[in-house]
Amino acid sequence: MEPPPHHHHHHTATCTSTTDPPSHTSTPPLLTPTCCKCGNPTTALTPPPPFDATSIPTYVPIRQPAINLPPDSAARTQQSIILTPVPQPSSVPPLSPPFLFSPPSKRISSPSDVRRFLDSPSAGKPFLGFVAALSSSARGLKLSDPCPVSPTLSAIIAALRNLSAAVDEIPPSVQSSRYGNPSFRVWHDRMTSSAKEFMREVLNSSDEGRNGEIQGSVVELVPYFTDSFGNSSRIDYGTGHETNFAAWLYCLARLGLIKEEDYPAVVIRVFVVYLDLMRKLQLVYFLEPAGSHGVWGLDDYHFLPFVFGSAQLIDHKYMKPKSIHNEDILENFSKEYMYLSCIQFIKKVKKGPFAEHSPLLDDISGVPNWSKVNGGLLKMYRAEVLEKVPVVQHFLFGSIIPWVRERIR
View 1 (cartoon, rainbow, N blue to C red):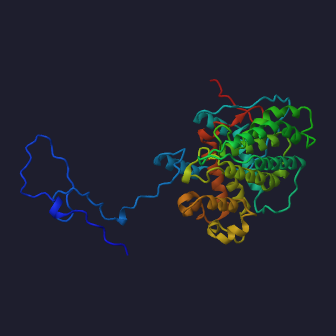
View 2: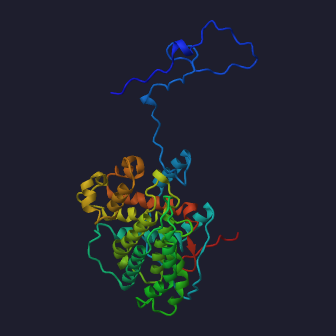
């Protein structure tokens, strides 16, 4: 038991008599602390008010959202997500000759540009349909399930593993700041310098890629690939970079290098290796989250593994969305299911109650089944990633993903 607080006020020494003559100066009197016992002026500081348990402030996240909507806008966004239909899988339209490959560039700078992109039957619509098709292909699959891996996908996996090995050769610099280790720039330069050679290896891994007309696509494919691992000057990574990786895969699909029968392996082989590499980069080089929503977001860095991971768990006999709160399930099944792996990773790197640092994921755990979770996440991917100018302003357009100019009226 703590001793009672010491009362610093002494009546015999510091209290002013009530019979003291009033001051006749024109200067307004200063506010003088009063004794908490007798009420007379005192030189001692007024003690703090007693603790009021009813006035505990609401939880304030350490990281404020970079894209913070006002409450009314947030409510409208949530309502629009609810009313939006779930994006459906669609076939990727093959790229037809004549091929006019060129370095891709950024085109999006306003909400109207975003709408033009997403409404485009040659860009946004088939790209989102491709993401939905990848998600659908992973339905009910475990990461250890056997699946055919094409020579193209094998080449991609080998390159990603080589990039992971390069992290071990480039240790982080000693620094005082938490985020943004400059050694990431050394790794990023190595990745960029080897990208063209790697892209040629990917093209030469299949009969379609060895087609002389397709070889010119290197100039267009490389920027998507090199933009998939974060920004070297800002030393950050976010859902925009993750989307560039998906866009790069979509470009390979348009070129005929990835076929629909490859989709399961794209998710449970290629994307898993990519996710492992990105987690490694985030932990070793302390990448800053790019455009993070803070606690209001799904994750500081990723979105698609939650989409693909929830598809894996659709119709699972025992695991429900609420199972993420069961530590035994996370420990035993995180190596088989991407969604559980992401939850486990978040719980390891973030401190405090899960409901406080990840309230959105905590809310999702209350959804009755994984099918609803998957559909909701696909709608959220469109609304919270593809419809956000700060994210898709870095999206690239060339001949494979064309930018449709506004028609002149």
